[in-house]
Image (cartoon, rainbow, N blue to C red; front, side, top):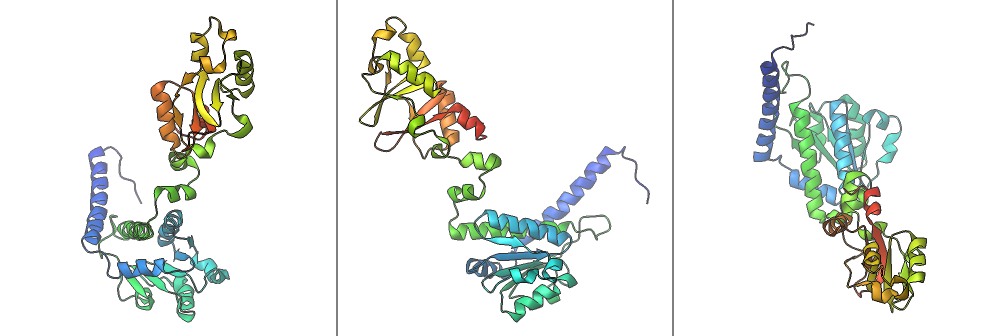
Amino acid sequence: MTASPLTDKGAIRGTASRVLRAEAEALAAMADCPPEGFARAVTLMLGAQGRVIVSGMGKSGHIARKIAATLASTGAPALFLHPGEASHGDLGMVTGGDVCLLLSNSGETRELSDLIQYTRRFDIPMIAITRVSDSTLARQADVALILPDMPEACAIGMAPTTSTTCALALGDALAVALMEERGFAADAFHVFHPGGKLGAQFLRVSDVMHSGDALPVVAPDTSMGETLIEMSAKGFGIAAVVEGGALRGAITDGDLRRNLDGLMGCTAGQVATSSPRFATPDMLLSETLGLMNRHKIGALFVVDEGGRLCGLVHIHDCLRAGVV
């Protein structure tokens, strides 16, 4: 096997264009005419009392693993089961309340045979994703989702390319349809994505705010000497002026500078900024960070619907959580 010289960049870009166009045409064909049985497949998954067991071998196995991960992260309990491991004891993971989703481009993958027989023996619903409508997998399935019979994108027409792209996209379509049928919303999405950038986008103030004894709280008639001690002890550079549990004002470093003359002869209520900006527990942390940035402040007190102080969120809390 000889390598072609990598000097003709135009030819290389042409290869990229040809591959992408071939796969796009297959996806367009499937979009124009979604597989028969798609709605029934979604209904079977919705009715499952257990999980969606997704399996495939080789490249189909890689796609199956991704489909299982997408289903699980969007509210449909799912797991990937390697067909080889299934034949050596892991079939015990499959129960009567599950639904199996099996992938095979040819529909004749011998490693899937034990899984197919198991689903038929114990009356476990089985959905097939395959390109061949009269294959063993398609014939045995309760629902067969047939992929478009389009050529693979590689030069020899054999490497799984177009077929795996179509299977992956069909898996995404199943996951999204299930999401919409279940009314799966952003709040639920955050439950399954607590880490990383996605998790940070859905964090709320209540997830990170300081509360209880950590809050720097003084009464309106507290002397500024005692107020400064409270501010220093809590370390946020801010103090809440609270009366009857309600937030009446906030004292920041800016308030201290504006009242330097005679500061120690004042009370907290005299120095505080009345009606300060605040956050609520259910605000998105990203929204709170935007509020801080717009008004050039480093911390916000958190109040509930009744105006009672319940927490404090600092800009460092947002940054530690990954909100930028």
